[in-house]
Image (cartoon, rainbow, N blue to C red):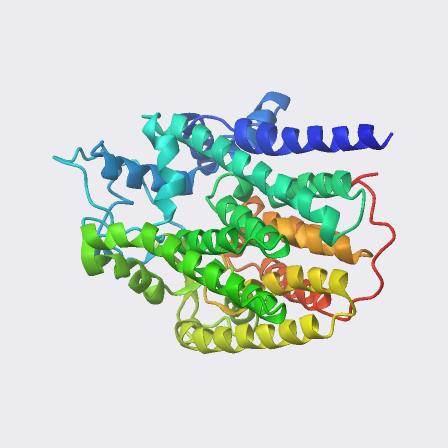
Length: 472
C-alpha cells in the first residue's frame, strides 16, 4: 500500500512538472494570436477555446525570450534587440503599464559573436550562462528553445526532489519520502509556471545540495554548491553564514576551510573568465539592479499602494513592472538598509535557535529553517520581489514544513497559491493597483514572514505523523 502511494506521488510529480508546466503550452505565434484576440475583445469562450487559453496561460515565455536573445548574441546568431542593449539603453525607460511592449522587432544579425557584459548588459550574474546556454546549443527557434529550456528546468527540479527525498529520511521522519514527493507536486502546481519557465530551479537544487553536503559532512561539495549558487544568482550566498556556523559549532575547522576555499574557487572559476573578456563591464549588472525602481510585488509597493496612492503610477522599466511617483520614489533608498537589518536579525534568531536545539535531530531541522530565514528576509524587505524567488525556497520549505507538521505545510501551500494568483493569473489587477490585489500581495508577503518565523520558533517533539497527500 505504501509503495502504491509513493508510485502515485511520483506520477503526480511527472504529470505536473513535465506534463502541465513543461509540455502543455502552445507556440509563440499561437500565444500572440490569442493575446491579440483578448485585447480586441474578440475572444469567444468554448470548450476548445478554453483549452487553448489554458495552454497560452502555461506558455508565458517572456523570460525565455530574454535568455534566447542573450544566447543568440553570444553565439553570433540573429537576436532580438529589445533585450540585447548596453546599460545606458535601459536608463530612463519608463513605458506606461497600459502600453504593450513589442519585442518582435526585426532580428539583428551580428557580424561576429557579441561578448556578454562588454557588448550588451546581462541582467544576471555570469553563472546564468551555465544553465541558459545548453538548450540554445541545439535549438534555433524561440519555440524550440522554450521547450528545451523548460524540460531542462524540470529535470533540475526533479534532481532537487531526489536530494530532498534523501534529506527527508534524516531531517524529517522515516517513511516520509512519498509525502515529500506528493507535497512537492502539489506545491509545484500551486506555484505554476515560475517553476520551469525561469532559471531559479537551479538555485533550489544548489541549496538542496548544500544542505545535503553539510549534513553528510562533505565540505568540498558544500563549497562547490554555494559557490555555484552565488555565481548563478548572487543572493543565495545569504545562506552561507548558517552553514558556516554549522561547521563552526561542530568544530570542524578543516571542513570549514575546505568549504570556504571550494566556494571561492568555484565562484571565481565561473566569474573570472567574464572579467577577462569584458573587464569591469561585468559590474554593470550590479549598477542595473541598483538603478531599478520599486518593483510592484515588493512589500513596500503593496503598503504604499494601499495607504498612499496619490501621485503613483505604474510603469514598465528595467524589464519589470514598477511603481513610481510619490513615496514610491523614496522607498528604494530605505529598502537597502532595511534589508540589511532584517537579514542580520534573521542570522541572530537562527543562531539562537541552532544553539538551543534540544538534540541533533532538532538542530538539523533548525538548520533547514536557518537557510530559509535570510533569503525570506531579503525578499520581504528588498525593492524587488519577483515571483520566481519563491522557487529558491520551495524544496527546503516543503521539507521544513513537513518536519514541523501541523498546519505549516498548508500555510506554505497557501503562499504558493496566492503567489500564482498574483502572477500571472490576475496580474493586470495588480498593475492597475486594485486594492484587493494589493491587500492579497501584502498578505502573501506577511504570510511568508510568519511561515519562516514559525519554523524558527521553539521546536517541539519530532512529529509522529505528517499531513496526508494533498487532496486526500
